[in-house]
Length: 239
Image (cartoon, rainbow, N blue to C red; front, side, top):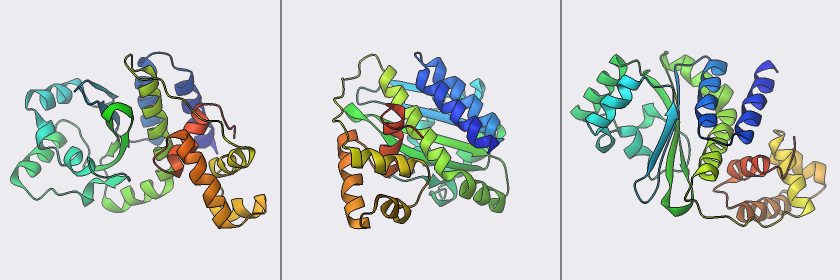
């Protein structure tokens, strides 16, 4: 319960942020709340413009840019064509260059475990939200099981705020959600399963799916979690 309240506080502060410094503060607060080594957010748009915030050391950031590790980083390469959270253990670390890259990263304080969430936005924007830690496989798997939903929600909130604060962004027109769509999004945001939401709304799961897909389309979201995050960040629903 304490972590839930603290997470809500981080999300509220992020929602109110009017400069990119708010994103940096959110990554630091989330790192401290979760008790992990690092939280990172990094996006690149179609023009090559980049923005990054997070808790990696400046020495590692400079080393990464100096060596142009973007071209061989298995995390970036492995996540670019994916849409779901990716545990680093599932990526291809078989090449000599990849193994050397990870060994050096660990020397700079990067943990042996990581989870990266691919994110996308208008104008060809691609972003990654990453949490990173040093721990045995079993402990890391338990951590992800416990916090997966909260991390995905934070990832989408960070991405939406970064897009909102991007000086050159194109304005988005959000279609209003119907009362039923709002009800469905609100109950999902509260953590209820689809079966429970359908039961509470006294509709079939098929009809619920129609409402969810309609809301997702109107919100310009990639999936249901993204739709919930967008509805929350825009104040359309309150939990």
